Length: 125
Image 1 (cartoon, one colour):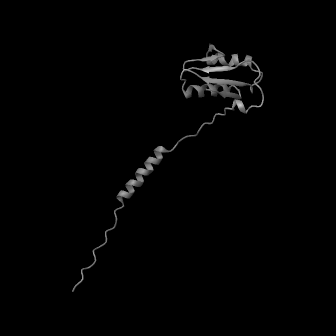
Image 2 (tube, helix red, strand yellow):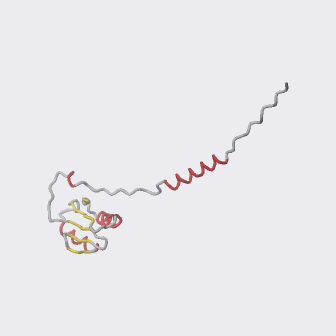
Image 3 (cartoon, one colour):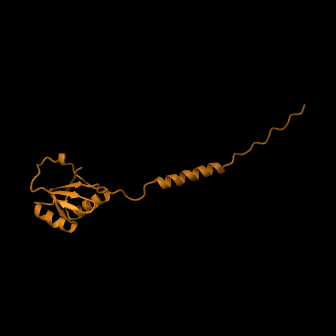
């Protein structure tokens, strides 16, 4: 009785595996976060051991404008008005978004005040 030769072994095709690896590579490249994260320091009001001093400095941030202590103002007038109310640049300024002001608008106001040298910005809801 003659034995049949064993069937030739098929080599697995690598094409599907290469396709899957390529798709995973594309997925992770698109899902990766590019660029730098920006960090904005906002101290907690309760973390301060010093009581609030000076006149009120409440800035309401609206989508189309600003209010300083309830008085409508624009960004150009905000900085000089705050200057008259501040004893130093480390005094607290309370920022409050209103009327569904978007995050970009809030960040613009924070950056403007930070660039002007104001150090203690408190963001409230």
